[in-house]
Image 1 (cartoon, rainbow, N blue to C red):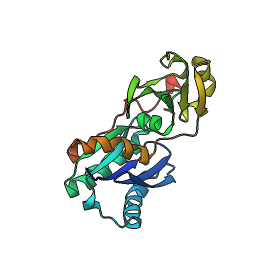
Image 2: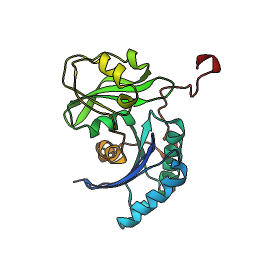
Image 3: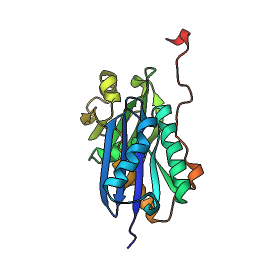
Image 4: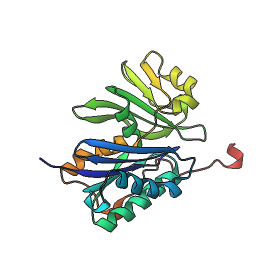
Length: 226
């Protein structure tokens, strides 16, 4: 049996979270970051490891929320993960933040929408497939009234995109949603959970390969577009 120790971090949105996976047992710390991830993440990592009486070199790998999400938060996560993993010579695994959001939903069909500012949402849809997920719609960025259509019913909506653009999204998916959790957000515990099979199979990338998934290159509207 493979026994794994995995450190996971997630800083793609308003929360900064870190998690420690130890052979299936997960400990997590989470704080509202208010865009202060760069000053919080390292302290939270060291605090969690200290509280759990483990050290960084005992980790078999480090996982991170790769995106999409806030550009600054994604860069912070990748930079910290690169430094930590390089220092101990261990691999990294990036997990899509929308898939991590789906993992937390507790449903078999999940449509995820995160507010992307600029009157857009980061969107993806997933169906449970065995112990993993199949992407019905890969992550993308859309206007709320132009998100990809879904097939069938019994979809669970999650993410703060439904809080910000709920009317448009509910109109788009009329009668297809069984419920909506508009307070759900990506968490390090789900990043750790999704990365475990990859690490167990001997997967992962070199530390320097940790990179964000932006989806959108443009970060602000021009004056003429406002």
